[in-house]
Image (cartoon, rainbow, N blue to C red; front, side, top):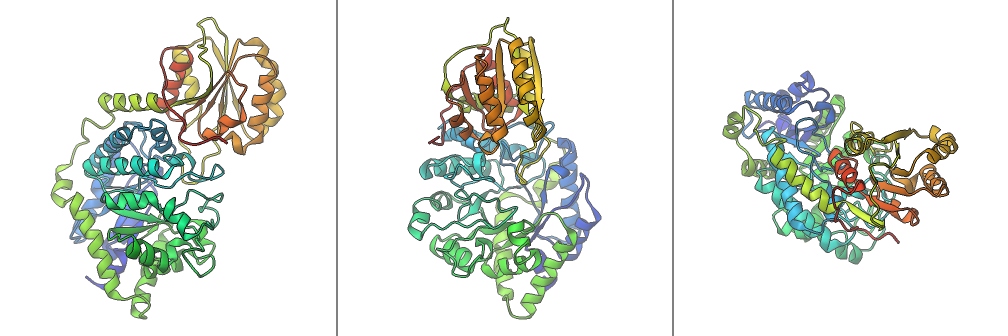
Amino acid sequence: MSLQKKAGRLLIAGFKGTTISEEIKHLIHEYHIGGVILFGRNIGTPKDILALTQSLQQEAKEAGYKTPLLMCIDQENGVVRRLGEGTTIVPGAMLLGATYRPNYAYQAGFVTGKEIKALGINWNLSPVVDINNNPENPVIGVRSFGEKPDEVTEMAKQSMLGMQAAGVMTTLKHFPGHGDTSVDSHLDLPVITHDLKRLHDVELVPFKGCIQAGADAIMSAHVYFPALETEANTPATLSRSVITGLLRGKLGFDGVVTTDCMEMDAIAKGIGTVNGCVQAIKAGVDLVMVSHIHSLQEQAILEIMEAVKNGDIEERQLDDSIARIERMIAKYTSWEEIEASQVVADFVGSESHQNEMREIYQAGITIASGQESAILPSDRVLLIFPTNEYATMVEDKRYATLEMAEQLKKVHSNMEIIEIKSPQFIDQIEFIVYQVKNFDRVVVLTLNAVQHKGQQTLVNKLLETGRPIDVVAVRSPYDAKLFPQVNRMICTYEFTKVAFEIVAEYLVGKRDIKGKLPVALQ
């Protein structure tokens, strides 16, 4: 293999569109890139996805690849999911955590793995093993299973094992832990100042447990840990002491190490994406991820080549990384398997899978406070909900809070809706409260109200009307601590269609919900 293709093999690239682009073809043929990452922008129907992954693999085969392309996706489920139409909606991590049943995490992982594998996706960038021990974390939150290291470890391990059993490579993220930050690494460089003992006692616990259980790959965090890295403001992704010293040396991990996207601002606004890719390889990672811009993808490969020529990176290190990558691929897929997968399997989005997941949703959605008080058929109901515009950069904005209205209408026709749009809705609060006198019951969705004073003001003003107010926290469960006086406080942890279906049925007394909060509200 030429140096150019060795360097290319260490790159995961993204592209735009639901059909193969000329840019990605160029990277496959010219550089033998290691793999492709798919986002919502690449996703159509299941048939479209399979056609896309098959065409990418065909290009790789024609280019002379020894093993198939890595085809990866962030299908964490819940708030970070890329698949849509025609596939099963699977509960996200915190909802799974709220069931307190690891077998459900395995089941969700297995269904996820089966469906993405049937679409030609062989590597899932999941599970998130970060511990959500900071209520103000803007980027992890409900992507975590919870706040207790042992519980997160068991749920993450079972999720991982379920996907592996379905034939999919998995990824623990974000090493050595992104849970206790109040900064989004898409926007800036977070710093975690805990000492080494604390990191071993808390943040590193799920990584250790999952490594022992057979982890395939680990994704590095763009987070600076002063206890692990002496050079100021060096994120873990670029730290040899973190990647080679801690992860490889002390924790004994010999699987594949990949970066988070190198175009995130924690890297791009510091060392820069291209230089960051070189530094990450020097630190000991096997794969660098450049998800969006073609020119940066190609430049990163060329700069890695240059670093080898200059002696900054030993060519043997590239060989070792390629061996790890190919070993992981060979364990889970082959050219023969890919050629046999010409039709979308009938279990993708099947009623059987949907029913399995509906059971888990019912076991995880949580009554945080309040009392049983079903909406009566004669009740006039007002549903108030915020537009989904508070999504973090890692999430697709394709999914809408409006879905709750559709689900409630199915079980209770005597209702009206008010959609509140930030920031204008602050001026609407008086009007909304005035409307309440025409209704017997009010249902309010909150979307990270802990971070949005306007939503808090609205709910508190509604409480003053004396009407029964049911609040449904459709993202952060920490919203529950804001409104102890409401009739019922329900946490769904995500605004997925099935979650809304379950809640709507619960509100009218047609279904029980059984979850328990996986985080403390103090």
